[in-house]
Length: 374
Ligand SMILES: Nc1ncnc2c1ncn2[C@@H]1O[C@H](COP(=O)(O)OP(=O)(O)O)[C@@H](O)[C@H]1O
Ligand SMILES: [Mg+2]
Image 1 (tube, rainbow, N blue to C red):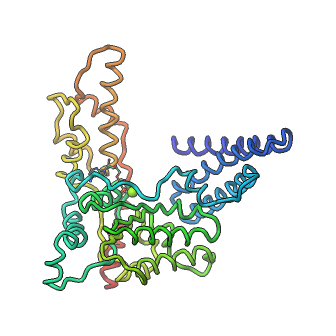
Image 2 (cartoon, rainbow, N blue to C red):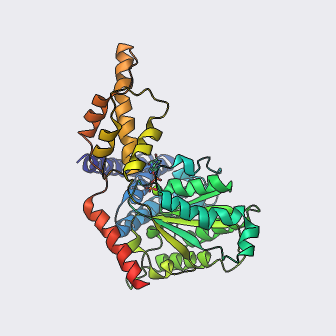
Image 3 (tube, protein in one colour):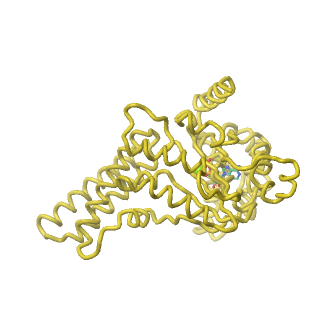
């Protein structure tokens, strides 16, 4: 209900912005003002594209957003040439390369098997190259992480950068999709080229890979087809292969992916990132509450029991909301008490896990289907 209200609120704002842009242009003849309203409207559409859960809607919204932004740039830029993709990146305020994330596997609760696989396949080959040679172990190929949202896929990719000390390149599919016609493939190729040029190697993380790696179908438009072909080419690393380039992709919906992407050598390993089990949930509570005063009446067993089915993100969010209660109280009462069990019960009573049973069944079915296919 809250989300529906937020979306309808955004649509009203969108309509208002477009009317304002129209007014600025027709009545005031102010092209720059019109451009700024349109650019704001495109930002909203890009955000909705990013959050859309259906691939067609994602594409449709991103195309509209890109068209609006195109008009905004043309209206606002009288003197210089239009540089669409630079502007699009500006609008997202995103950087292509982020500093090597400081997090490591120790900052990630549970996921013992996934961490072990990542360590063995991605980190050890870089740490022990002479042993890899000795045992003639083949390296390279990417790693696909899949699982419900909020289970730590992005965190795992960042931790690989932290463990290896390599620079971290993030490609957000929504960012790539928002590019101008023909710009998406170029952007993808440029990014891989930049990562390959890093002398010490790099970790490239393609988030929401389903948005650009969806199954090729007859109805698919030419631009999307070219983009997925470009992605396959990049993954095969035809030219200028950098031995130290680690490629990781993540998706919440692996069943959307094109079969060609799932075949080796594109991904040497696909890892399911599950919801946290009991011990991982305990670790998550400990991580989320570390450094915060916690009352003695807080019962870890109850927290663990009550958070069955919660994702890591749900648990972190739950703790943040519980901490807010004594924090807000302390502002008015000036008494700084510890977060207690009543705070947790209060927040728990209003919280539902973000992942439901039927979504989980879908992962199990997909995993079984993949195993049979082998
Ligand atoms: N296993 C975990 N350990 C620690 N924090 C976690 C874990 N899983 C999720 N989180 C919390 O949830 C947030 C979202 O996780 P993220 O990696 O973005 O999930 P995903 O990419 O799978 O949707 C993280 O920033 C972190 O606060
Ligand atoms: Mg993520």
